[in-house]
Image (cartoon, rainbow, N blue to C red):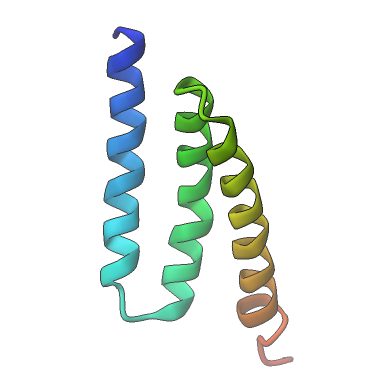
Length: 79
């Protein structure tokens, strides 16, 4: 695959995951999908040389990770 085709493949994968995350009614699943989706966008930003988007995606990833920890891991009932 050419560089452009790889970029489009990564971008399309990320967009598909974003679409699924937006249509999911379960907030836990939405947070996890966004968390797993963020590295795809970051990789696309690297290949596209979009440095400002790389910074934004890194901040978003940290935000998603904190949300998963705060709402999904920390709040689990103790057995």
